[in-house]
Amino acid sequence: MNARPVVDRGRLLVRSGISRGRSMVTRRRALLACFYALVFPFYWWTAVSSGNVRIRDYYNQFTNSILAGHIDMPFRPPKGLLALKNPYDPALNSTYQRWYHDLILYHGHFYLSWGTTPVFTLFLPWRVLGVGNMPVSLAAVIFSCVGLFFAVLLFLTILDRFLPGTSLSMTAVAVTALAFCSVVPFILRRPAVYEVEITSGYAFMMLALYLLASGCLRARLIPWRLGLGSLCLGLAFGGRPVLTPVALLAALLTFAVVMRNSANRHVKPVLRYGAIIFAPIGVVLFLALLYNFARFGSPFQYGYSYALGGTDVRSLHLFSFAYMSPTLTYMLVSPIYFTFSFPFVGFTSGMLPVALPQGYLAGTVAGVLVTTPFLVLGGGIPFVGRRDRASREFRAVLFAIAAFGLLGMLLVAYSIWGVTEECDVDYVSLLLIPALLVWCEVARAKRWRGLILKVAGVAAILYASFVGFAISFTGYYGMLQENNPGAYWTLERATSFIPTAITAIEGHPDLVRVYYSWEIGAYQPTLTDVRVLSVPLHVDVVSPDSSWRLQLNFGPTLASGRPIDLTLSYGNRTHHLSVSRHSHVVVVPLEGGLVRIRLSVPSGQEAMIARATFVRAK
Image 1 (cartoon, rainbow, N blue to C red):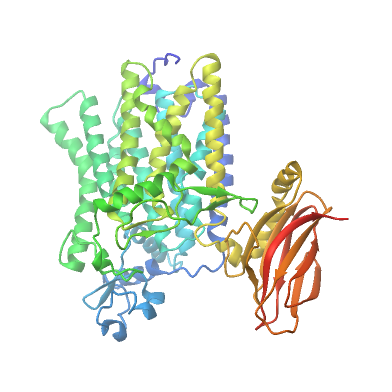
Image 2 (image 1 turned 90 degrees about the vertical axis):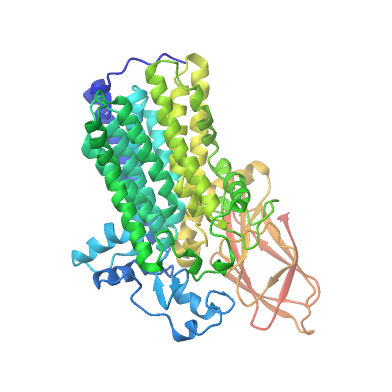
């Protein structure tokens, strides 16, 4: 690897390339301005384009309670719920789940089960300004954009300090990964109370680490940044309690770095910087424990065992090492699949061959090593740089951020009796930053080796960014396709040239997707034993040209001897066919590109497709 140039710590840090010339500053700032101008509107569109997603407005309701001087929710549990033998049993409380799902029921009161940072930093100020209720989707977008903004600043701060001269193109690729590989676009597809809590933790953790890094890695310490960074660490776990150990570790390491770089280590400076770093986070921690005590009579009781969820949580262990093995397996290697159906990437629904504890819930999740394989570069941190002081300091910074990410992953795996994609936000960005910095370092190698590492890294990062971008269109439940089918179909038609080109290379059409209207996002590769009902069955086919036909073989049905009235439509054409109760073949002409075929029969009738084949037109 190339020897790293000597860095003047007092001049170069976080000056965004000023020492390299004003033109370079202008180019990078222009790049970042264009980047934010594209990504931030995309985040917003993702959050609002799914239409009515039945978002529970618990944060605005809790804001009403705070303004009234209460810490419980502003409504009482129904008498019917309290009268149940076990109100936490989902088999008994199913009638009430629609209205009170995941709230904490304790001693006749409802309490919020999510962190309160979003209330005091966004919802309450918004209300005080007299604007009204803060839209939940807007809150998720604001926190997501803040988190991304400071994740990029943190990355650039470390880059400027230790890897000056990194090309603008590599910087552009890296910040693209921070925007699309963080799982944030995925969770914005359903911006509910869960996503607001998670993105608030993401926003304040990134802000805190940026402030701490830019405050203690300079030749001269900046106390106000250290104090504000400490406060943001507290706000991070105030919004996302699972991040509490990560925040405390970050504060301890910051204090260690400050003491190591301080020229005066007498009692008074130690006490001064100790107060600056630990007092803000300590105050937030004290208030969080006091809040728990006021609700449940114990500072360490968060009330999760009294939540009204899809499982009787009181029968489960809130923290267990038994969760770690299956959760880490899903988090790391749960596979995805690629299809001709927009957005071309989907989650597998099959279970992995791992033993699951009783009550464990395996939700929608994709392994980070499958979606973001370049994260393995983080394993190269011990081999970065040479043995000079700057390299040792660089490795220490990378180790610290990677440790925060790994600790976050382990805490999620240890504390939750299930696995779901949204929890990846707690640690993925913390793993992305050191992996990207390692890539920027190894790509500086001389000649062909550096070129190979640079190209391979770009390919891996673009693959991961594409996957992250693609799954943002589906989210958990295919809400864009369900609630805004016009926009989804427009996107599917606009991108149909991709599968069309592939079928042209293959030399034959392909079945893209088969689904009923209530199975948004379902993928079925064949038409064998598919029933046609009064609810339309959609069959998406992509063909290289118009010389092909789709041949549907309808098998015998259990209907009476009279024929089945089949309605078949595609494009602007609709045909009404009569299908006998015995085997019957229907031929559908195809066009070049994507064709959506809709099949339905009158209510009370049923037809079955036994087989589908593609044939050339005669």
